Length: 382
Ligand code: UDP
Image (cartoon, rainbow, N blue to C red):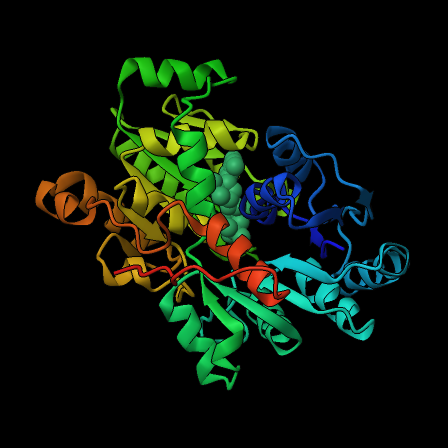
């Protein structure tokens, strides 16, 4: 009997990082694959599944506008449990640190089903930032049987928390597999304004923002900072693929009206987003995944957060933590535009997060875990 791996995921970033593994599990003759989506993000999740050609076996459809984290968690527990009973998986695989991950891993644990955690061991060291992700990933680590850590730093974090090192494999991050796969395809822009931007050859400041800690006043400040920058650098194009969350949109978008050189788009399909990332001159973000992708394309990244669970690219000098203060954002972006030497120092391509072979290592680690194969050597980032 082939081990039956049930992958549970619910948001866009999870889907991007887990989709190549789901495809590999389906293609493998060593495993059976069952996919469950919670639908924590609805449209942005469906968009990724379509790109990777995944039709989930179960859809828990937990999304509701404005629901609390507790309501979301309760729905995942309630709706996943019968699926666990019906499908009887040999392991439940979760990715990252969303509320879907915390709920699904606990639900599996309560049913005594081993949990496999992809992208295990990331830590900011501050339980309230990112919120609620730092707590989600710590909870998941407690009930995980096999930890697929992306880097040596994340492995060390787990070992420091007394996780048995024999249960940790350093795989590299699957997002680099996904990135290398899609960026090479040069998928067309569906938004013609992006194609025009590429044709015009204007320098692009690419901005993404959604973090819960920045909701409210800080995000208003991000909007004002973008306005100042757009006015200061009329030759530049500021591109903001706006997150679906209305809280984010209401805080940022009113500040950007009437500016010729600000382009606000809907969330972009992954292929288009990576193409835009490759085109960008500077990246300003509070995203986790973008902090991993941009350095491998040699883009300087300014991170609108006080801390990060991804210190590797900060140490390599490609990522800088600047917080979400309006003035600081203006100063740091201006410095990159005005000081070519500073720009050159920050735009080194580094790959501390992966070499594009994470999926192979994950499959081998799973096979080893079930006694049907050998592990591959760990990924070494430096
Ligand atoms: N992304 C995308 N389209 C967009 C913006 C981002 O496909 O319009 C991708 C991006 O490449 C990265 C992921 O979404 O892989 C990051 O998602 P997000 O910032 O929402 O979540 P986080 O990584 O912070 O958890």
